[in-house]
Length: 486
Image 1 (cartoon, rainbow, N blue to C red):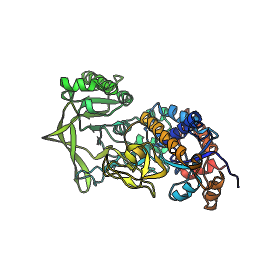
Image 2: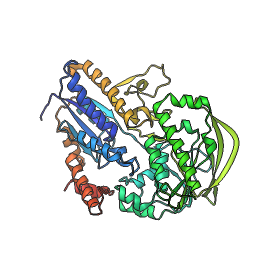
Image 3: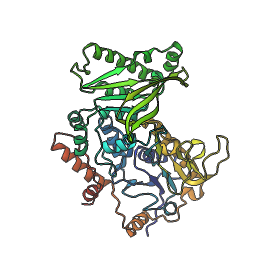
Image 4: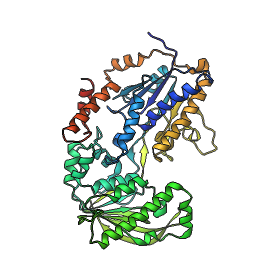
């Protein structure tokens, strides 16, 4: 047995939250460790249930986001660190338990993200042709355990949601397959599926107004450049009062989003005036309607299948409060996609806050608690050595920037707690760094490490190069394992 004196940290989840937290922990320890009596040496073992790292960046973002490869590249540089050890294809709660981790690590950090949709909760939500965004995203991103085929028979479709995921889903449903293949790493099954997509009319329904949408400017700019697609908006939605304009102007990102939406309004007018064309002036064969202040209230069906959607017009005040008007309209559609939020994953042995949809943690500080909080001022019992970050900590809100600030907060709390613990935070009984490897081997679990991931990545790049593309995703988990362990 080899004992080491370095701090030992287990991180569950190798998406952005887990990778950023690992990096920030090592950086902050180097900076503050001596002062806190912790020293500056640590080993972080990063456990990921999928055969490959990067979580949301690889499997939760539309493939045509140009920023993905830059984020993935930055995450990969972080993982290429001798103090961070990647254990992909190892599932917490199945391949290794919480008690087994606490025996071997001084602290355990959950960065488990989200893979499930919040339920739609409307009459007709169970009809054939109603889909949660998460499953569709899994399909077009080639998630290892996701669907391999997707029904794209509907000529008229609705997308419900006022955030970036709704925009991604709508954009992929309006995409030209050849254009998408040329620019992205989509696998063959997704290319073939989108090639057969029959959607010609899409309605995007956003419950609140132009100034309350949650789109990023990048999403809007990607929406503006869809070959063969005419954007259609209702000009009345852009009739904003002075209070709303003033409120939107207080926040830089909101102001930029609203300005970009007004640009889209002008584009839509030009597209119509020029004879129903796309952004390049070519004849459009698909129509993309954007409806603000429109709250779907029922999915309409016949013989168990979607035939339409009923929508109530709403009004939104400057402070974002929405009220209903009692005015309804029905639209013929044969498929409905809802992107109204994700539900972060549960973790075996950890309390879950159902109301806020995240792992139970103390007043949002990332320290895992025995039970979900009863209220903001309620006394909470913290479970020592257990932490949460990212969506696991705060619920399914915020982008990469929020994940980074989360990581700094949680790491600060972890270092503070470790510095107060006996023996300078070194509290795990088993300090042999190879102990976890022996445990997994005894169970027949073969982790994929960073070198294994690099083999998968090299193969994907080689396959992409054959088609003049930078990258082409492998989607079969068994093929990933064979490549990684070759």
